[in-house]
Amino acid sequence: MPVERVKTGIPGMDEILHGGIPKRNVVLISGGPGTGKTIFGQQYLWNGLQMGEPGILVALEEHPVQIRINMQQFGWDVRPYEREGMFAIIDAFTGGIGEAAKRERYVVRDPTDVGLLIDVLKEAIRDIGAQRVVIDSVSTLYLTRPSVARSVVMMLKRVLSGLGTTSLLISQVSVTERGFGGPGVEHAADGIIRLDLDEIEGELKRSLIVWKMRGTSHSMRRHPFVITDKGIIVYHNKVLRVTRRGVFEEELREEGE
Image 1: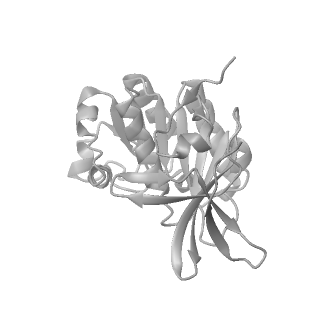
Image 2: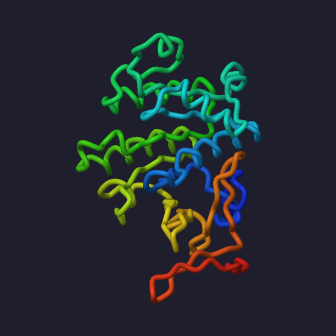
Image 3: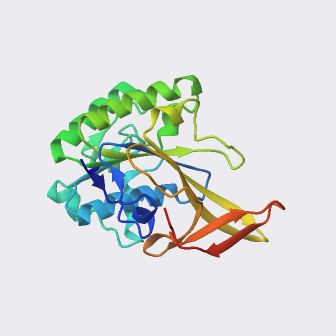
């Protein structure tokens, strides 16, 4: 039986995933500051809307008003979709404080209460029939209590997968960190896409690699990507590699997996 997949719609990404993310997977989008994690998540949701798939963005680190402004800079105006009941932002940032926050439909009054967040998330998913969910960032939920990282991700996974969504959890790591944003989260997630920003010969270069993806084969190579005024473009036919001398070399190479 063929795997049912969800297209990210991000140029080059679905080729790397050999067709897209298996449906109901919960995927960590892990990386340091400036790597493009938030844009990746927002682009995934926007592309879903273009395919008629309702989506939800859980905002834990930024005001919903600012998120709408930032998305619009890429040409992703989500307000008409909110009015149509196809898109929702869950405000888990303001705690309902401020005039703008009072106009939000879905508000988590105590953003530190994971149980409350899950209740609001369930309500929103059912209300709009969401097929895609992005939580930005899941690390906020266990930043001060890393020991609960795995259990928090497992709780979210049960809800997100159980309600039929294909979801991205944005996971923050420090610039030098080798992990994926919390002890045990890599085992709880169905997939991990790691985004990196490296200084190479005096220039910053972005790249990503799929560390794992349950239910599908995928490219095992590190691919460069860029952020344009229309979003992320992944070069699925290029590889960023490290030589023994530690020098990164970018070379054109056709994917053969």
